[in-house]
Length: 419
Image (tube, helix red, strand yellow):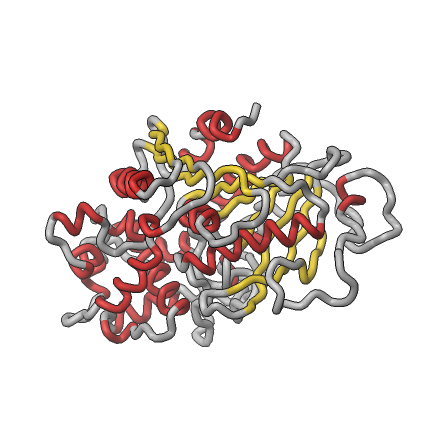
């Protein structure tokens, strides 16, 4: 995803439980522990980050099988530094919680897009990004089977605040907002402050609302690997952070270190992108333009580039792959005199090498991954290590980008001390 690709050319089936707040439920079950959970009276305010604003029981193909899942909205802080509302999923295992509550796994998802309908929490079978989301749901079931609550932030602008099509994760022909010319991208993609808030504030909110344990594991894949590292690097991560796992993490730098050493500039790197990786081009740029309104897309995009960035308002990543002709390259989308200075500076400020995660970190990468370039992951790990971060790196032999999630289970389990 993002610079790591650019440099190479980047379900719960259980019955719906009683919703949180139903104080008539008094058993020791998971759903009972989620009741009466608001710790303060009255309606929570989005002005105070880390509070559940709403929780609705759902059956979601993007959630772990078994247990009980809620789609939640919660208060957080957006890329602009102001209060905002974000959404996500919370899944509790079946059965009674242990004393002190279920421990938590936070899962930060891979790239889905920057439009409101691309949120995992609104996904329905047959909708966009289904293969990846349902694969991940199987992986996350390993965690609920081991007694962990799983929380999944959608990220800023996805699921809520996304304009037309919000709350509808259906397919292309279902009137879900795809193709709406009035829509605009709302996700901020690789803005590390926003991503950190999306993770940390959901962990904080869910822990309080659902009476979860004060310990959490911080895991993410692809864009979510970047998000997990950003969350661990916040000044004050959610209380109880144990360890961080970043599987095939993307990065934000338009010109990674080795490309820079080779004398390449941002236009060279972007211009060389081809194939399925070109779908990350509009997602990355749309996210940057949304996160920092001072950036001017007209400074570096031609008409075709502007049109493709606008398409990212309603098309998710797998749909964008279908939209872009195989013969198109990044060079076909850049203005002849493209000035990428401002957007490059913004993205450089987000990159992993500038992060300082709290606690031990494991970074993983599949040896057959052609979406995220392995050299960029090892270079990022080395930069963190040089800065004094407790980080280790492991290859995942024979795994491509998607396979690396499941194929790295044993390495994750060893690192996290899970049986």
